Image 1 (cartoon, helix red, strand yellow):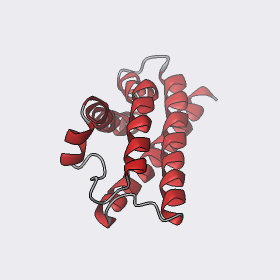
Image 2 (cartoon, helix red, strand yellow; image 1 turned 90 degrees about the horizontal axis):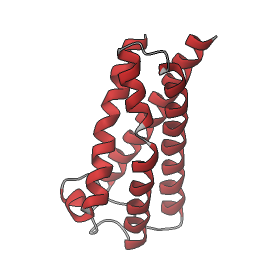
Image 3 (cartoon, rainbow, N blue to C red; image 1 turned 90 degrees about the vertical axis):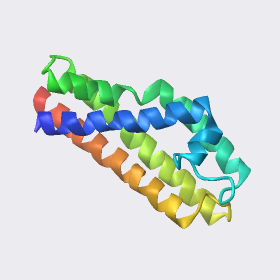
Image 4 (tube, rainbow, N blue to C red; image 1 turned 180 degrees about the vertical axis):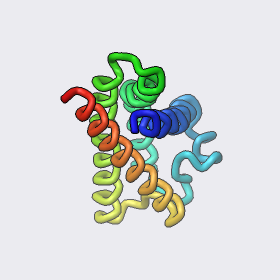
Length: 141
């Protein structure tokens, strides 16, 4: 189980790289489909997404590193998995709450396709976060 969860955690590097591109060049991230296009999203939403990407760079590296630690069976992997898993559960839940809250007030948050892609990413964040926490907990008890 540890190896499977470790591999799933490594996939999170793709999300991290997407956020790195968003911070470095938000317009490029929009053209690549990593961020909602300005044609379908209010400028407020784009501004919030840029700031969220900046925060993600500071915080969301922990779970992919935990994935590496899991694969090499380093003694610290359960702790990194639980901390990183908590970060991913928070990020996925918080972003979903933000998007649904803004949409509920009429703020344009992207096209339907972009919305489905974002929700899929949020589900992945929460799911891999919960799996990581559970795997880390099982190892420590």
